[in-house]
Image (cartoon, rainbow, N blue to C red; front, top):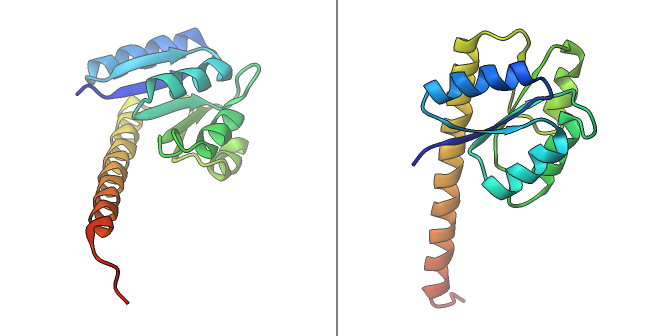
Length: 145
């Protein structure tokens, strides 16, 4: 299964750079140029991770993250924020971001962080499956008094 990563940034050059880099890493890349498009694609495509610019026209990345983390279907998608503004770091993490990378970013560092959040996402998915399995087993057990 190919891992899908959504990249949302209003700068075409950044989108192109990340698309080429992530494709070379073997990921399927979905691109969004603004926050509204990022929200729609996240809900429709269910990516395994999102790389999200903080400052975008319309819906900014902080609001996108807040909305994603508030929805049951998207709350466990890891979000890595990228931005050229250091002052957004705490606010981004408060909105539910899983990681944060400053622009200009080092591609090796970004790759490492992507792998890290994907590993966490995989473990979260495994845990959810185990809990669902346990719940199914509990339904079959007689009531204990």
